[in-house]
Amino acid sequence: MIVTVTLNPSIDRTIRVANLVRGGVNRAEIIALDAGGKGVNVSRALAVYGAPTHAILIGAALGSAWFRDMLAESGVPHTMVMADGITRSNVTLVEADGTVTKINEPGVTLDATAIGHVEEALAALPLAGAWVVLAGRLNPGAADDTYRGLASFAKERGARVAVDVSGRPLDVALEAGGVDLIKPNQHELGEIVGRHLGTIGAVIEAAREVIARGVATVVCSLGRDGALYVTATEAIHVECTEEIVGTPVGAGDILLATFIGGGADAAALVDAVRWSAASVKLPGTAIPTPAQAAAIPVTRHAQPDPSRPLIEVS
Image (cartoon, rainbow, N blue to C red; front, side):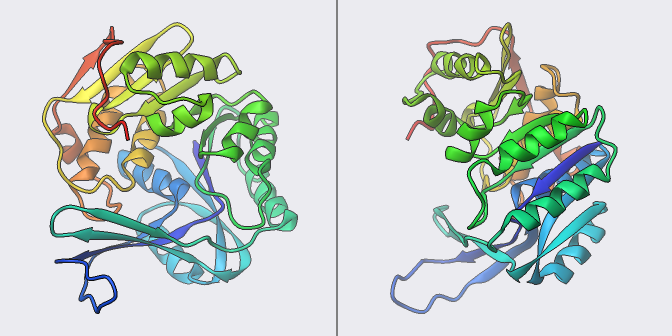
């Protein structure tokens, strides 16, 4: 069982405009409308991948009914903890030349009472031996140690914990130790160690610094360079052998989902990169089919080239 916790779910709109006119009227075409938030995306991907999952999420007064319908349609069992407010919307704006602009709303305000209800939802599930994925931006009002507390709560009940968040909440979660897996991209990993990461070797070195703080595994997504799996003793690099063109929104969530769903080991990274890359070709945060993922050609480097520069370094 892979349980996801999404404190700040979103209604994800992907729209296309021929040419964005600042200060003017823009006629847009809706490409996709998806139930989103990192943890929700992970559960949606797991449902398609064929791995058992259960999504715990915060529901707001406006938007919760739609969310329930969308998760049911996607075959995702879920527990919704209600809070006051409006479910946030995240807008991805795609221009004709391929430029992608994201506009993300902050979400509903959370307090200790709501977090307590999330813990109750976790406690109601069989967590021994399960994975608990804590993912996504924290809400206004949520303390920086929110994920640390939820991680400790899950670990005490025998779960393995993956955290996919950036900034101070991740630093605080790592302070307590016991996080089994993190999935940053190279920029987020660079923020953790406080320096720019421009090569494969630099990413591996940074990942090992984080592992020394108590994390068992780091899976680092590298955009067009694929992804790295790093433990204290092993580093594996997997990448696509052809250029993948499209919108990468949600691709990292699918990488994390299929990595854990596939066993959370070095072998699982191959399939995970295929699924993640296949999603880039699809509109919005659509989940690829197994056939679409299988059609993506990838290569596995058991001995990554440490001097290789990364393409997406800015």
